[in-house]
Amino acid sequence: MTDLERRALEFATRAHGDQKRKYDGRPYIVHPIAVADIVRTIPHTTEMIAAALLHDTVEDTDATLLDISEAFGPKVATLVAWLTDIATPFHGNRQMRKELDRQHLALAPVAAKTIKLADLIDNAIAIKAGDPNFWKIFGAEMKRLLEALGDGDETLLEKARGLAPE
Image 1 (cartoon, rainbow, N blue to C red):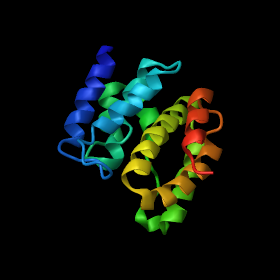
Image 2 (cartoon, one colour):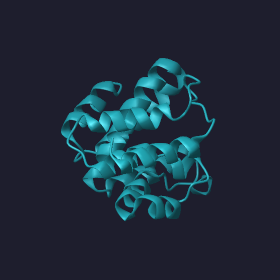
Image 3 (cartoon, helix red, strand yellow):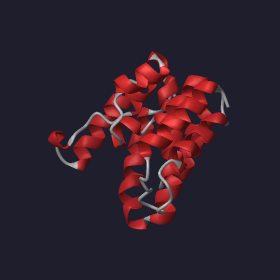
Image 4 (cartoon, rainbow, N blue to C red):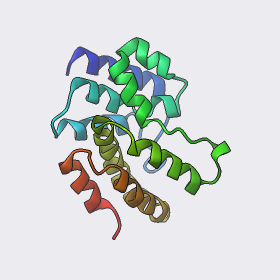
């Protein structure tokens, strides 16, 4: 593990604190670690691993993109920015918000799309096992999102497609 990756893990662990995953009650940090581990299985950069570890910090904690930029530099902060949902309740119902976020990710660089594929893979596994009712909603959203992530890593794209509902 590089120094950048170690610092990102420490930052994410502190930022997520005692948050728990909805689907299995485990400490939330297991998700960013799993996403980073999935990214490690394909060609990647150190910045991609750091962004994978930090991908939910701006969305789910008090951390800001400025905090990420100051601590980890513009490359990591830019990836985290692409991975952070831009929709808010102001943007309408869940379907409208997810569509706005999908359009945002469609414009993302390949590295961000690759991290998002790893995020989808880990979430799909957890949701499918832990919340079959929500899986119906998430699975449909996942299929639509995969259309926007088509130029992400091919290996992860195929794995994500294999997890998506028919």
